[in-house]
Amino acid sequence: RRIGAKCMLVPKASSAPRREKDPKKRIVVTGMGLVSVFGNDVDAYYDKLLAGESGIGSIQRFDASVFPTKFGGEIHGFTSDGYIDAKNDRRLDDYIRYALVSGKKAMENAGFELSNLDK
Image (cartoon, rainbow, N blue to C red; front, top):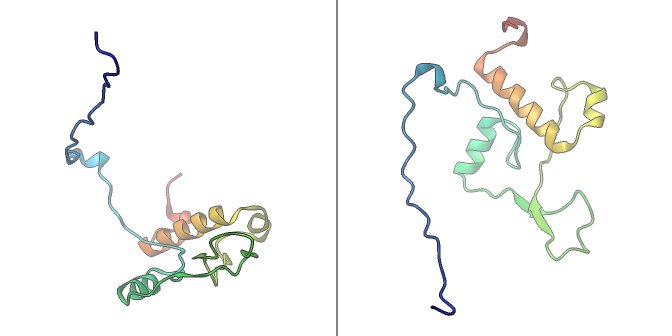
């Protein structure tokens, strides 16, 4: 009888996922859209990323003086005009607004129009 013996689970080595061969199950990126600390369009984001700029700065949105960390990444200059109606814009949390606008921008970038999609 062993006393104090430990049993450890060793994680199984994972391999890369297999490439999907069924064309009906493959994904194609057709458009890009984003809302970020670097800007609200793909080109501005990419330019600032390549320039090595940081999107981190002192927190301006609320009083952070009572917290130990006073810096973070905030999205400035965001507007949902033309993407979300005013009523929903007031009701939705910011993260939902960011997701909706970036998704709609990706659809625009891909050339999709909701009126042209089959329902």
